[in-house]
Length: 48
Image (cartoon, rainbow, N blue to C red; front, side, top):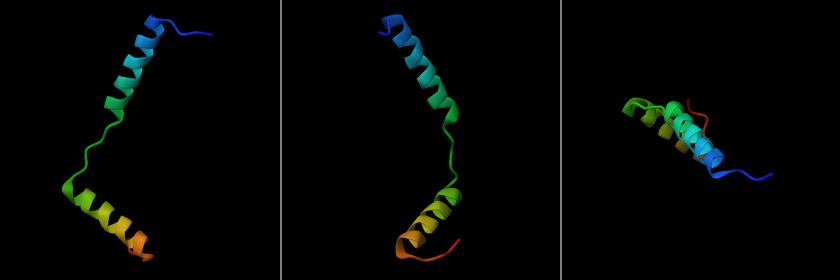
């Protein structure tokens, strides 16, 4: 089964729309917490 150019364009637009909708914004506080947790996991710590 092959996809037509029109179908391809429609699917691409749906993907773009979904990507825009699912994006989230992080506050600097949230980002710092995420980095702290990631670094503690890397070191083998159990910090939350």
